[in-house]
Each structure stands twice: as structure tokens, then as C-alpha cells.
Length: 307
Image (cartoon, rainbow, N blue to C red; front, side, top):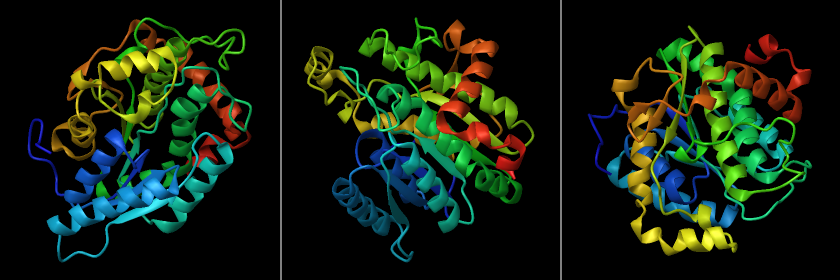
């Protein structure tokens, strides 16, 4: 992978978690971070595909760092299930005494309404609630690492699809009506609202949080059987390769140029303004509150949670 703008940091000694790492942007991001020397923790839903991807990334990492021990770990978790996200958070805290980068990459586009085991609309649950919850669960480790290393980074993969919609707090679970494009767009808007609120709450803590649109990338997100997914696949030859899409994510994870930059929305490697709806501070605060309730975090004092 060619560097998009500048030399990337040597990531040796760092620990980077990447969700949705068995294919697409997540796999390409994990591979490049491992090549840069990071210990990478791949989070995958399917163990078979996860292990195949892990073997590929391990082999490439050993070529780049032949004298190093294994630098690619694998965690299996279905991010649509809140209990599994909680278990993942516990595992990451127990297995790693530092966490430098969290890449919230896993996401779905669903042609029809699906409900998770927790009774939540799946697009909103996987694309927003899962990264919201996982971020909270590992935030203490991120803050500890920032205290020692100077900075830790949270990157959430959003999309230009967020433009043109607003949050419908009266029907977050889309029970009144389900429109796949709107559901996806709102989940990507939620990513940016979450990033803005998170960055404000982490001021002076050494942890930065940014959202990124990596471009239109040919990934498995269009694997559905509905007409939208079928049309999207027809034009997949026009899309970026996963390695190209991952460049912006790796840039935010490893470039010294973005040190101290937080609360921003990147279109590839450039800061751009998101939609006006993404700057709604009341929506940001309300989404934060509702998300804590839906994930069970409302029962935890936020100050205690961050300790």
C-alpha cells in the first residue's frame, strides 16, 4: 500500500484493534498496520474466514518483520449481539495492557429489515451501537495508553451516505417503516454524531476520535440479494480496491500529520465538513443518552466507567 501523503509512523510496540478484519477495508487496514510493526487484533464474526485472513496477514507481517514474534491476534465476536460486544471488551482489556488504536470498521448494508437477538434493528445495532459500546468498554485502556505514550486514536468508518438525512429518534428501530438506504445513511450519521460528542468528552485526555469516509470501495457490504445490492454490485468495477480504501484509515491511525486532530470528519485523507445535521449538538447529546440506554451502559456511572 502506498502512503497517501507522508511517511507513516513506525507502529512497533503499539496495539491496534480492527473490527470487521477478515475482508475488505478491515483486512487491508489490519495488514498494513501489521506491516508497519503494530500488534494487530483482528475482530471477526466468522472464525473460519477470520483464521484464513489472519494467516495471510501473519505471512505478510513476517516478511516485513522476519525477526519479530507473531503480531496478529484474532478475536471472534458477533457485533450484532450486545453480550458478545461486552465479552470482546473484557477480552481486550484482559489480554492487552495497552491499546493505541481502535478502528471501528465493521458495518453492514441490509436490503430488508432484520432484528438482532437483542430486539434491535440490525443496521443501527451493528453500524452504531456496537462501536459505541466497544469504544466505551476499552476507553480506560485507551486513556491509560495515552497517558504513557502521549496519544491514543479512535477511528470510526462512516460514509458520505450520511448526507441528506437526520436522526429519527421516534423510530430508531425502524419499526414504522424500513428503508435500507435511509437506515444505512442514519447509521453513518450516527457515527459522526458519536465522534463529535466523544471528542468533546475526551478533551485533554490524550485520546483523539475522528470519523472517515474511505471512498466507495468494492467490499462484501453489498452481499445482499435485494435490488439495491444487486445494482451496487453491477457497478463494483468502478469502486476502489480495499487496499485503496484502507489508506485513509491507516493514515488516521499512523500518520504524524494528524497528531492531536480530533472531532473531525475526513473524506479520505482530507478534513471536510459533514452535513449540517452532523453538527446538531442536541442530537449528539440525545444519541449519546439513548445509546447508553440501549446498550445497558446507562446503569454505569460514566466517571466510574472511564477509570
